[in-house]
Structure formats: structure tokens, C-alpha cells
Amino acid sequence: MVAGTVSAGQIGLELVEAVVVGTGLGLAAGWLTRLALRHLHHAAPETTVTLAVPFAVYLGAEELNGSGVLAVLALGLYLRTTGHDALTSAGWLLGRSVWDFADYLVTSLVFVFIGFELTAVLRDGSDDRVATLATALVVAGVLVAVRFAWIFPVTWVRHRLRRAGRGSAEPATPREATVMAWAGMRGVVTVASALALPLAIDGGEAFPHRSGIVFTALVCVLVTLVAQGLTLAPLVRALRVGEEGDLSAETSVLRRDAAGAGLDAVRAATEDERGRPYPDDVRRAVELQYEGRLRAQEALAAARDGTARPEDEPGREVTELLRRASEAEREHVIEARSRGDVSAEAADAVLDEVESRAVRDVR
Image (tube, rainbow, N blue to C red; front, side):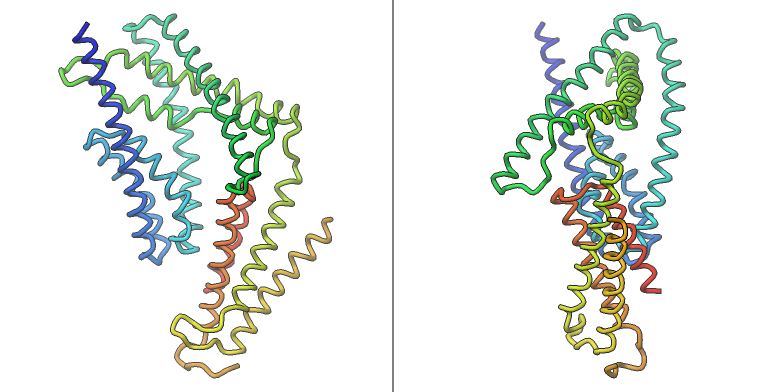
């Protein structure tokens, strides 16, 4: 009995160590990566760093007895939240394209791998299949219930903070909270976490019930994707959550606000980074560009509802002022997304346009 208690205690300590080390290393690596990205000014090196660091963090966490999966997850969440301003516009566009393709490729391969892994697990007779299946279904049900138990209190707290003036995220209605809770499909992270379990323990014996754990994870993925995934759209329609025009209208408003922020930044800028005043013709040229952009956005929304400068750098001031305006647009959108004033989809759509223009303007 004592030996069993000690063994369980040791397992608990190892789990805590894996969580703490993995999460801590991921956050530290995220901070260092953001710092490194600030000193890179080319798209290819920036994208290379964002691709290479997760592999290094995973291996480092595993060497330190931490969870490599949690380390990469913490790294990704940190950079997703704080890393955008450390990238150049070209780096953001290239990185997004590369990661979109990587996400598509990895997700496709994972589901192919799930088929092979399920076959291997079903052939393994070390666990009672009926009991393992029952356990997996119970775990899947608990996951859904826990998500509901988490989403609704958080929604209530956000609503109270909003009313008290201490928060800025838009509160969700009970219908929206229901959709959010039901949208908790499992996928790559769940499979990766289960497969990261070692094949053998320190004594050389096989990891106890590893096949059952992997099988449970795979069942959770399949149950949530099939049961919740196929019923999510009917649930959204039944609860009448959101409309097709919401995203378009939200994106249009945010696009106009971001253009206005860029124009305000141009008008407020009086000196360049070296303390020299911007020539009048440079200021007027950039103002005209943003004024035209803003007028165009306002017209679309209404329809739907000179000074001398160094000879060796004639275009430097224009490029610099355009960059300032683009940075003001970027900051406005990121802050709006961080506050919860707009959805992540609308923010990403406008950021894509802002960064595309920024790349075009400097060429």
C-alpha cells in the first residue's frame, strides 16, 4: 500500500514537473524568440526562426523532463498574442502563408496517422477493449462537460468585469457561450500529447496502459470531431448566433478605423527618426494616399448600406512616413483584437490588407 502510494506520488510529481518545466520553457523561449525577431528585418530569416524554434523547444523540454507538447503550445500562444509587432510586414505575410500550409499538411497527416494508430491499438490485446472503449467514451463526455462548466462562468465573469469597467472584451450571450462550449473539438494537440508518452518506464518495462491511453485520446478526437463537428452548424442556426453579414460589416468598420488611425499618425508626425522635419511634399503625398484610402472605404461603406532633401535618398522620407502610418494601423488593429472589440477573423483580414499594402509601399 505504501509502495503504491509512493509510486502514485512520484507520478504526480513527475507530472507537475513536466507541466511546470514545459510551460516555463515555452514562455521563456517565446520571449527570446520575440526579442530575436525584433533584430531581423527580412522575411525569410523571420519565417525560418518561427519554424525552427518549436522543434528546439520541444527537444529541450524533453531533455529537461518537461512536456515538449506543452512547451510548444505555450510558445505558440505567446507568439500569437505578442509577436506580431516584432515581425516585418513581409515576414508576417510569408510566415502566415507557410504556417497555413503547414497546418493543412500536418492536420491531414495526423488523420492518416490516426487510422494507422487505431489499427495498431485495436490489435494490441493488453487491455480489455470493452472497458477501454467505455472509459474513452466517459472521458470524452467529461471533456465536453468540463468545457461547458468552464465557458459559462468565464462568460459571466467577463460580463461583470465589462460592466465594472475593469475589462474590455465583448461579453458573450448564453447562446454564444453554448456555441463556444460545443465548439471544443479535439485534434492534433490531443493526439500529440498521447503519443508523446514513452514506450517504456525507467525499469525497462512497458509503459502501463499506454495503448489504452492512446486509444482514449483517439476516441476523444473522433467523437468530438464527428458528434460536435457535424452538429455545430445546425446548433448555430438553431440558436441564431451570428449572421453572414456580421463579419463583412465588422471588417469594413475596422478597415476604415485603421485607415483613420494611419492618417492621424501621418498628420501628427513632424520629425523623422533623426529629428529632421518631414518635407511638405512628403507629408502631403502620404496624406493624400491615406485620405484617398479613407474616402474609398467610406464610399464603399455608403454604397453597401517639396521641401529640399538629400539627393542620395530621395524616397527615404516617403518610405519612412508610410511605414509609420502602417505601424499605426497595425497597432490599432492588434489593440482592438486584444481588447476583444473585434473578432480574430476580422482582425486577421484587416492585418492581411495592412501588411500587403506595407510591402507594396516600400517597393
